[in-house]
Amino acid sequence: MTLKGRHWFLLWLLLFLATAATVVARQGDALRTARRVNRLREERVTLEGAREELRRQIRTATGRSVLVPLMERAGFHLPADSENTLIRVDTLGAPRGRRGGR
Image 1: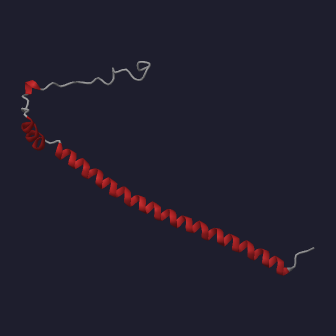
Image 2 (image 1 turned 90 degrees about the vertical axis):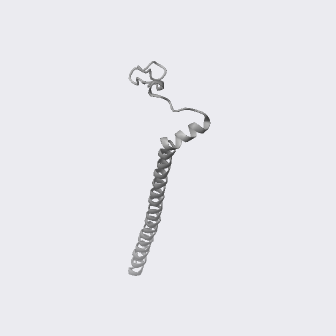
Image 3 (image 1 turned 30 degrees about the horizontal axis):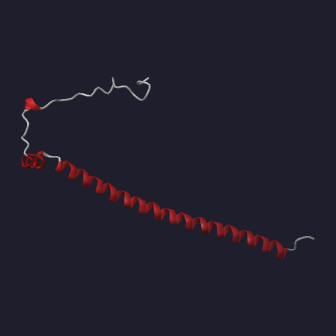
């Protein structure tokens, strides 16, 4: 049985509709992905702002203007320079892992 003109037309029409449906579906997926990327970027900006605010709060809370009054209320005194001990950590000579750094 040979295909007549109307059968070829119907076959090409179905092929075109299937291709068009695939393109529309992919464009829909791309739009959803683009929206999600934008939401994630906005969330990232918000989180970075929150992180910087927390870092600022940490810097403020660990400053002398906050710590000295807390120490005095707790009964500690401000150490003199002779009471401070600097501890040096030699990271190059420290063993690494279980096998002693080798």
